[in-house]
Length: 249
Image (cartoon, rainbow, N blue to C red):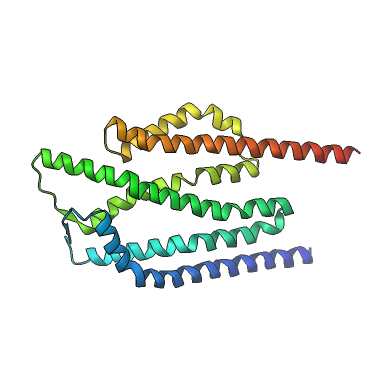
């Protein structure tokens, strides 16, 4: 009983140390964000809002955008560190093969997140801005955008897409834990397709071509998730059968 309490306290101590390291890393990278936020702002304005007049509707708008960009930089840089510490915390409870497999989730999740950001920023958002600008011109509306509202609109479009690109990693992780089975994904396919079409219609201009261009990558991600879940599930089933045969012998 005494040894168990000591082990539990050591477990909590390790958790506390890792949380401290994650918080420390976030604040260090936040300083980096403060340094490069202005350069990122000018790059975004030149590549995305170059044809639009961006205004400040309140004295605090520029500060809020500056802080937003700084926190985003800190979040993107810190995310691999957070995932690594989470992996290190749960690693002792995993088998050696599971440790190697779950370690691959870290670069995979980072890569997919970057791909999602790139797809949302370079593919979806320019279509959306171009469509809205053309509608405003047809209606004779003078475009006056606030810098805080414009960047907030950009984040509301790009970040959900980036998070959706994490679907294959999440599916693999839940399958490895035995929580999710590929049959569930297959049975939910028609509803998932409908949901992704609705998401594509919401975040893209309301024309058929734009909706299809956004929906197809989302649907492909879902199909890749089904394939990965099926592959991992069958592999786990074979390993369990081999373990049962070894126990019987």
